[in-house]
Length: 189
Image (spheres, rainbow, N blue to C red):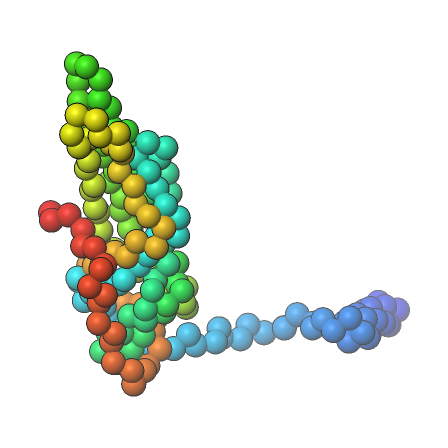
């Protein structure tokens, strides 16, 4: 038993010295609780989150089902707590993309329908959202050529939360910023 104990002790000492040299830490022998991420706040249904597009999208080149990425533009404050910060990422998809068509016999309007489905906040929670917006365009006039719909990079949207949900948050003394007047709302349901 003594040689086995000596071998174990030597291995432990060697690992300890090696870990100190490379700046690594030895694994903990007991489980320690995870650090606290702050408060938890109940977010009411319909709380507005302002997001902006990270790239332009055109009904001619877009594919239905393609993922879209957005950025939260301002801190979202609920009951004295920040639930999402400017710079947090939001995700959605192209729900429908149809290029406009106009020939001698048929005219078809261009359609581009986008969604914002969720926001990933700064402390790792997902905020479910309920936003859908459709844009339509027909060619204007006899010689009009621009018949596709385009959503520009940096377009602002007012995105409401889908349902009441609890998310991690940080306390703040700041007041909520007003919603920018150029932020578009979604389709009525």
